[in-house]
Image (cartoon, rainbow, N blue to C red):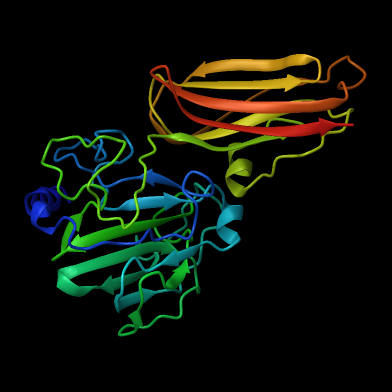
Length: 322
């Protein structure tokens, strides 16, 4: 992939802007989906995204658009053709994994899982991977329109979380849709690039995926499955815990978490994250212990991810204790 990327950087200026594309997932970025990984722009053994950030891994040749949980995936998140074209190939029969983070066995050469390969004018092709089993009726040779539904986000092939892996190619060479004309070794400003998207897509360097309240500390697997946050907690609940999940963390980030109750501050902590991770979760709270009950009223749980003194994500939720 590294050699292909170098060729991409050489060819990109002539092709930049020649092929406008739609966003390939029917979701609201920053709300019900987020970009977990970008194309790897590093020509060595390391990895960096187009802003010289850490949201990529060595050899990654596409854009990973993730949904927060398995529950979200099972609700049905549509995948869209980014431009008009014809179907070159389709795979739809691989079973979806049932638990995030536990990849099942799949045939060699089928890392993409269920997917669709589209051919467009001018040597452009787009590939859509890890799609949900049985959610496309396309066949090779079919024509599709820009924005047409071609399947759903899934969890098939080589993946540890539900997402769409989207790859764009020109004459067989990978193209980064966020910054196709970026010179080798350069870094694009996070606030905007000369990308190929028909509408601007803001770069998010990491942030909060979800937040919730429970009566005990959940497991990370429960959260990834789609553990809902309670809206009410009995006054006799054995504990009051808030959890938060984050993505794209870097060593040195700080996760600030707090619960404020009807009588004021209830629980708070700031944790310094010690490594770069695709996803992570933390929890804080208190046990009922020897008190007879939790004070009645409204409780607000809030989490913020801080990088270099700058807030890059914040979420909050409110519950009631009768």
